[in-house]
Length: 217
Length: 213
Image (cartoon, rainbow over all chains, first blue to last red; front, side, top):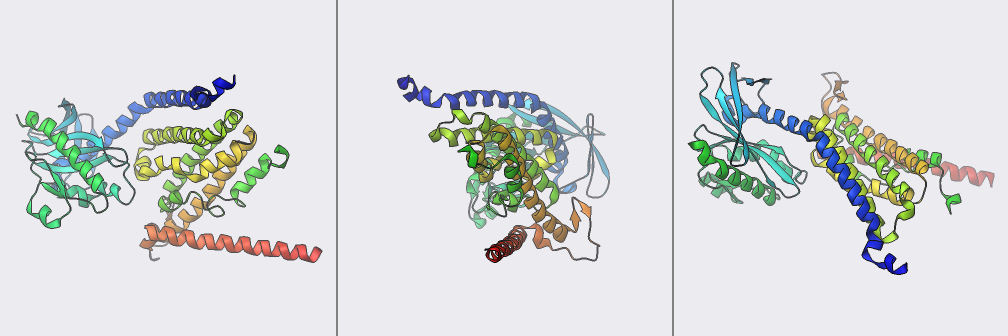
């Protein structure tokens, strides 16, 4: 009896059983709530599409009315623009094709990318021009980076550094303002959050590389 | 022995003010400073923390006879992490904007010393009833602390309380109060006030005892 108690199993059986029970509980919670969480993420994604594709034409927080097959967005000049959005999977990524509502001309693309950040998974949305040759916007959909340091990746000052960056070259982070100003593909890293900045650049590079050629056809 | 340990009602009351986690034990400082710019995020944080604390105390108390001293911290952490994840997912599903606003502070409940200290001090030693009373008392104390800090900051910083305007438009808004320095200033002043009251009360008691003696 004493021998069993001294073994690893004899010592850790409670931890193992609790791990199984808690793991099952979390799996149940995930199954039960995942659809609702995904629906929330999708609604947020759709509401961010206008600013990612149209940029300054709509401002950073435009009024967006979600419709069944698209949305209506208030432009910076006060006019309303109807947009149609169709969803597809390209290179393993969720990609939204954004069309003008009236003549169905393509306004651009929005792709969802994900990767490991400093603390946890980072999910981003990347806006691309209709020919997929240039990044038109970036939005951080979810992140759990260090408060007041890494979480600055969600702020407009950092996100706007990606606007206008060519999509045919990989972006790199730099710590020098002069280098970032001289080369559009160099992104100025956030002070004290180099890993978070690097993570976002890696996700952008990977996502754009996976989808660019397919979208540009 | 159990005879000397506090009863359920003593645990419930002591958690609210005499052993208030924030004002008397200086635990749970991270959420107290980080999410108290307004009442809504502060109360959401209180609800999530209370849920985790109550569940962790309940489970710890139920399995207290099976706990091995050298593995108890692992068990506490495992239990707390599970319920924090459940709370985080529920917020993401049913209160998505608030979940985004609180960001990493909900997962950070895992490292809130207030919860692990209640598992260690009370739930691992006493029965389910006492552990639950302790969790409710400490949760109420935590709510009192966050509500007091958030009330001062939201009213002075934004002129509102729970989003409802309470100060006239002419009253200047102190923008500093909703920023991190406002959290430190408010907490420091409220801590000083609570400590001053507690000190004065204890002096009065000592004087009374001396008079009787």
